[in-house]
Length: 100
Image (cartoon, rainbow, N blue to C red; front, side, top):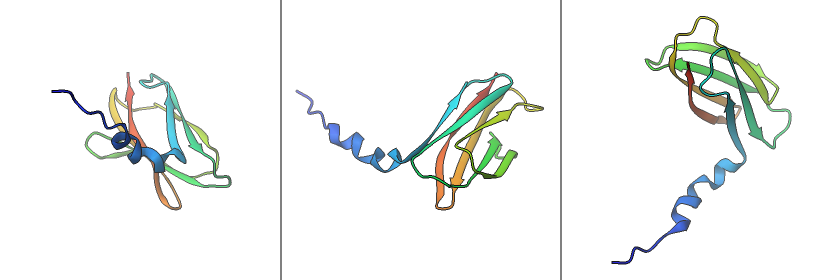
C-alpha cells in the first residue's frame, strides 16, 4: 500500500498562467483594496469587473493601463465578491475578494 506521488500532474496545469496573474491586498478589506496585475507584457490595456455573489455587476472599469489599481468599498455591503480582469486576449485573472 505505498502511494506513488505524481508531482508532474499538478505542475503541468499552471504553466500557462505564469505569464499573468493577479495579487489582491488587503483581502479581506474594509475600505480599499489594491489589485496588482502580474504580467511581463507592456502597453497592455485591462478591464476590470466585480460582481456580487448573485452575479450583479457592482464595479466596472475599462481602459486600465496601469498594472496596479485600487478599488474602494464605497456603498458595498460586507460579503464575498468575484472579480475578473481581462486584456485584449481574454481573462488574465479572476478570483474573489471579501469585504469585512
